[in-house]
Image 1 (spheres, helix red, strand yellow):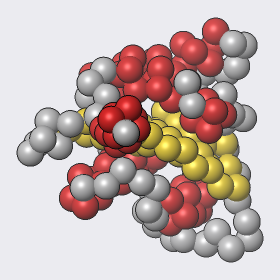
Image 2 (tube, one colour):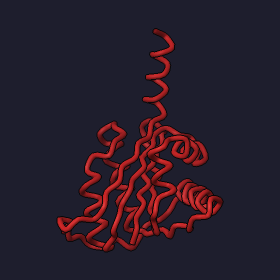
Image 3 (cartoon, helix red, strand yellow):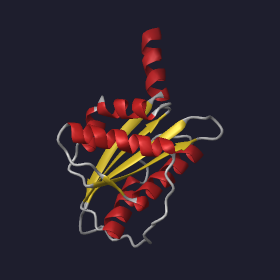
Image 4 (tube, one colour):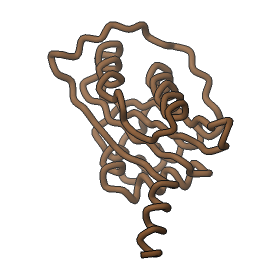
Length: 163
């Protein structure tokens, strides 16, 4: 019983999940392109780790897009405000990215409560769904790492895009 409770607590405290979508004819959200985004050190480090991994297995490095990182930050802010770790409104985010950037495919990884970029990327690579997104047929990405000022916990949203 105690072992099972430990597993549940561990998963809750260090959680992440993956999602993806492909363009359809219904992708018609009209939004303004966000061009300004200031990256923090954790974001730059996490993006570098993902690209280093992709290159190490013979894949292309992904180019960052500020608009996508802005969408990631919006989702982190939502998760912090609602005290959740989820993909709520992923369809709206992916539709926006498909519409604004003419993207063909969008995937998303989220994570919570990893203290370092290395730990978050390792957790994603140890999870089949996350790893599939990291190794996916994508050309660009965006990322936000946001610290909840009340708890000090980090929220990660990483969106992958094929243009």
